[in-house]
Amino acid sequence: MNKYEVSTLILRVVLGISFFVHGLDKFQGGVANTAMWFDSIGIPGFLAYVVASLELVGGILLVVGLGTRVVAGLLSIIMVGAILKVKLTIGFLGNGQMAGYELDLAFLAMAVFLAINGSKALSLDNVIFNKEDRDIHKVA
Image (cartoon, rainbow, N blue to C red; front, top):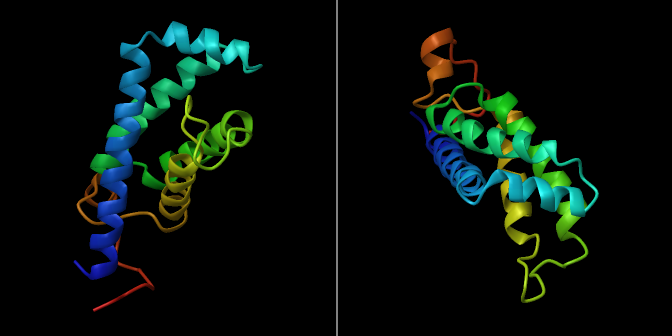
């Protein structure tokens, strides 16, 4: 396993755990409450269930490396929506009552990286599909 793959593995696992925890928090706090909040800001409430589920399940899938590119792409869309619809007006660091979009932007960057590059190290994708190593990013 080269340095590139180790680094990508770290990004994948940290992002997966982070999204899993955010999704779990939505369910534990009552996803219906999140749905009502979505409605209050002009987003259809049912999307709260979609977002929470994708964060929870997608986080697990990232940790185990299954469907990394697709999951990361979907999570990127969620982050763009969160930044543009909720956080942009609050500012980069927030306003004291609500966090800014700095963490969302970091999650977005990580997700976009994984959507573009994938992650083969210790991934179920690599085991299940037994992909040959065609990585052009070889680093010793």
